[in-house]
Length: 89
Image (cartoon, rainbow, N blue to C red; front, top):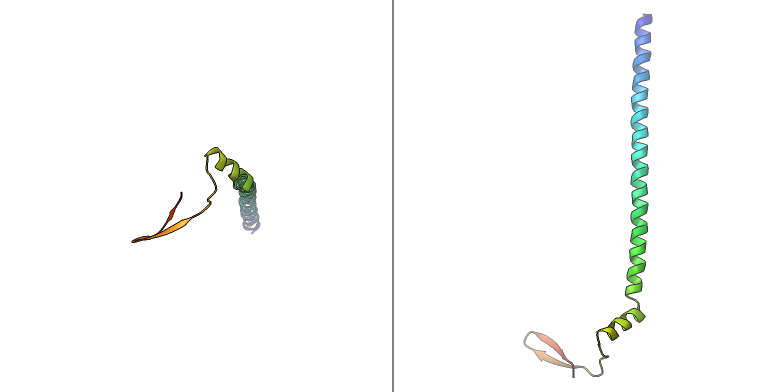
């Protein structure tokens, strides 16, 4: 009888250790995924700021000047068989 109780206690102890180990492993994995998520959010934020700077009006005007683009003064639309066309003069 004592041997059965002792074996049961050992079995429960081993089961407890296995479950605790699995829980700790999942906890480390969760922390790793959360850290990766935070890094991705920060990278996304940096990219958004960079995109906003690139698309800013002053930057677009500077890029237009670099490509020797000129403002549109008068636009005439021509109706063609497949739609409308804009003519620049």
